[in-house]
Amino acid sequence: MRYLPSTRRGFVGGVLALATSRTFAQAASPDVVVIGAGAAGLAAARMLQGEGKSVVVLEAASRIGGRAYSEEETFGVPFDQGCSWLNDAANNPLVPFARTQGFDLMDHSDASEAHYVGDRLANAAERKARNRGWGSVERALNKAGDAGLDVAASSVVTQGDGNTGHAETWIGPMDWGVDFSDLSTADYWNSADAGESYLVREGLGSVVARLSEGLDVRLSTPASKIDWSGSGVQVETPKGTLRAKACIITVSTGVLNSGAIRFTPELPVWKQEAISQVPMGLLVKIGLQFDGARLGFVPNHWLSYRVPDETPAEACYYLTWPFEYDYTVGFAGGAFGWELSAAGPEAAIDFALGELSKMFGSDVRKHFIKGSMSDWASNPLTLGAYAAAKPGQFTARAGLARPVGSRMFFCGEATGGEHVALINGAYLSGERAALEVLAGGI
Image (spheres, rainbow, N blue to C red):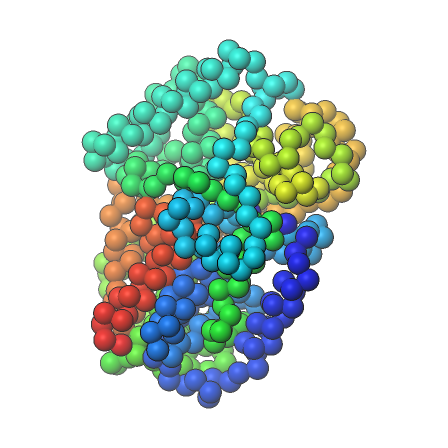
């Protein structure tokens, strides 16, 4: 979240040609329609097809991958506009898949972090104070989780010593896409540790795109209406209607909350409430390309700085020179991420450069070439980066994952179990939905 091999463009082009050359008449009544060609949808389709079911995957975008999106048009080398890390590698099915497909994985589990105070590296006492503040935040969250509390993280953290701001802005906006006032302590407590984590030289989005090989994926084909009034489902699109025994819905809660997909009859109240209680958070990625000068940044490291305890704060943390590429990635999330997105790419890039300049001086701007900002906030196919349960509403995730009418099944990162908001959670949720379809005798 990189120089793609020559096969990358050839592979994607092949998928585009395949997806646009088929007509609805060739698969008017598949067993299952999957809505969304991200990790969840592709995982579900692969499992169902492996069990002999006919499957059509509908994707509203003109590309495959959803929020896993690798491209090289911006900087001339692979860059992940969306998710970047393969977490919990020992239990992540995408890790062995990526390896067997020849992708280059780099262990990023124990990447070092340079922490600044103003224009200098933090000294030993300042690092100790930061670590102490981080420890106090984690202890407060774990105590609340162990007690079974589902409240706002901000309500259990004691501020005032001047050292909790770093932990709050990292754990909240960076990890969850929301500030502590919007972070559920139960959501935090019930999530797994990241464990062994990898970056992908060719981009994580290119790994997800490879999952589509052999599948019937229809690009630029948004589902506008799902009629589940009969024994099966009818999925309407601008290109025609598909009839199937069941459908698997993988779109974000942002899209579900927007009403972009109409349901006939309407979804049950319990399902509508579950969707509304798990809204989208936001993490903005700001790519900054330079002319080859390293400017004191260390490749593949984290770069952070001291922020005040009064949160939400205007914080932007960085991944520097991944794979020695000539770009650095800034991350800003939560309320401030939404503000930057609304202000637009120019403002976001200027802010990220300004924060670097405070640490490393004016040479930062002298060597800057161009930048980019991810558009997940305004993208109508996402309307956010990933979902976070509202404080007090952690159990809504279970309702979000629950099937409707024995023929509509829901999955995606928002229903990823202990791996919510992660690519492996999305993938595993797709397999879970596929198993539910199979268990129903479809």
